Image 1 (tube, rainbow, N blue to C red):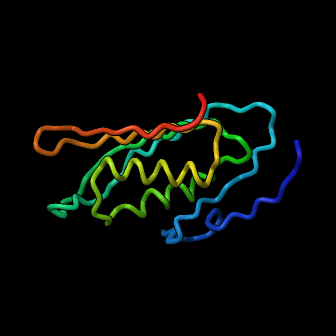
Image 2: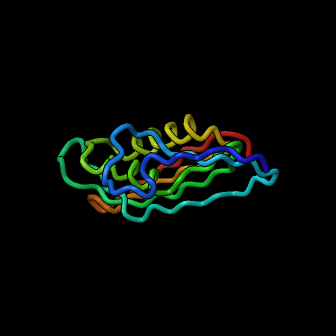
Length: 131
């Protein structure tokens, strides 16, 4: 495996924000490309109409090409949506597009499952690449 320097911007530092939305990426020089699964079980955002909190969970699955995501930077990225008013479906697309553009994986699947509001539990999936 070819060694490449990794200089994290948030790992090992005391920080609670990642305002730029830029993820720390770790070089992946292996010949094997595993299916990576990441669970975000405490996602929150705001309803754009009522301002009430929306609670949900995200499952992110991807097959890396050249990099993998550092999880602390992903956590801070996901937390950056906490006070953002946005429809659930749009959040899933925005998170999916950000991950696709920064990771440049072989394949990506992002699923957002949100808690009930008015008796309905919405969910949405963003998927891109060759599985």
